[in-house]
Length: 166
Picture (cartoon, rainbow, N blue to C red):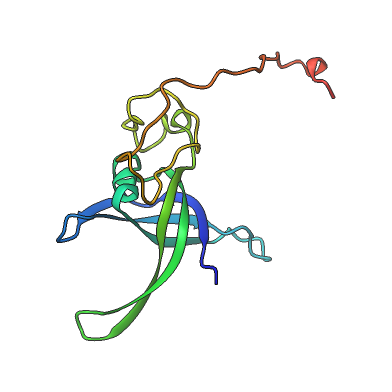
């Protein structure tokens, strides 16, 4: 059987990092995801607000590098949890348990946005976008970015359409 989900959207609030009694990191956050289709009557697209939870190094990564408004790609599994509220009523909730969380935008895209310039990806100036993530379990203890950006084999073209090869 297969239970895999991938969503992309913006964080609705800053991630909340907590620790279990044994010290394991767990981060909860909510992602606003626009639906792919608009209503037939011409109205606006609807948005789903999806609760997510990330454990261990992935949770620490999300807590450190993501803020409200930041675009994220979350890959994991859908989990339905049962719980009892303070009035004794049985409740159920759905959430994505994140295996990997990727940057959905680049550092360059986020610099002028409403969530500020506090996104230093380990001190690197590389704005490569969604190339890095925190795996669910690793042996290196967290995020590690490359020492420098990869070299580019592309030449810049003027805005003149005559230079295009097609």
